[in-house]
Length: 330
Image 1 (tube, one colour):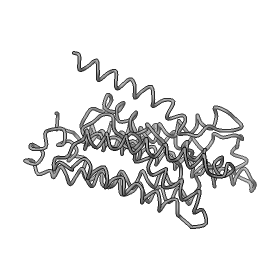
Image 2 (cartoon, helix red, strand yellow):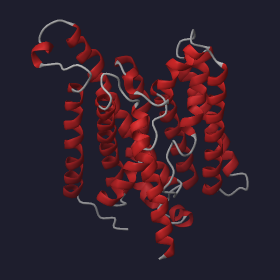
Image 3 (cartoon, helix red, strand yellow):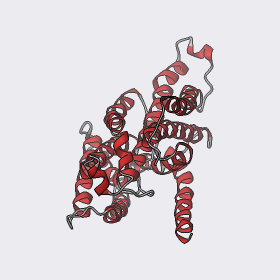
Image 4 (spheres, helix red, strand yellow):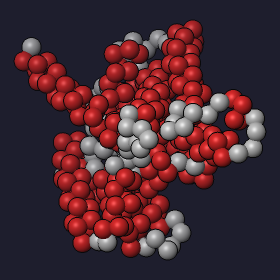
């Protein structure tokens, strides 16, 4: 692996990724069910309130969540050395959804109960699958992925059961959340997204070079001063907390962490000092575009953004599986 990274190359790659991402961020508030002109923004009224109170925080939320989900996928794929993992495939999103669903359905009168139960279920899941994967005193990525997929199926079935026995009017309002929707974005929710995303971003920034060393065997990584298990545990915890916070407000939004890091490896390479920041900006741009599509595709209504990412992500997931099979044959 090439380890020399010049400041010039880093600056060029970051500029080429950040510029289109920020351009999309600035353009996203212009899209919606109603057209809002500059003259509408200069006078008091409903359209001005929609623009500043809903569309701007929604665009910022899509940018931050897309970047965070993509960053999460890149980190998990590095620490677990598996190209198919992301918060969604590991079951973190599904179990967090189950916790938030229980709180929103049965404890709506308790403030922040959705966040609390989502965090609780996500934390318990993290502890469970990590202990399950380390039960033979040797950390097994295969067991971790298997446990994650099993919990994901269990959580999905439990939510289906709860929807079946709960009030149909309540279920109807939560279905959109379960599909992953940014329609709930406003300034307070953006603030909470920022709180959950910041630790993940800061942690990944200070460990970019450490992730490069995980490319080698655990023995070589230890010999270079990298505590592999500690890095895996803390990375997994950071991703779990971010995922739980994201799900509690906007529902599970899958496949961003799978699609973007894979595409970025083709563009920026495997050096995590480039891959992590470029994945963040590309993920931010990807979810911003997906949110615009969700708002424009079926006007005057809108699609949940999780549906858009799933429609793109599922075929991409199959493509990766087939590509890996073909690579094994050769």
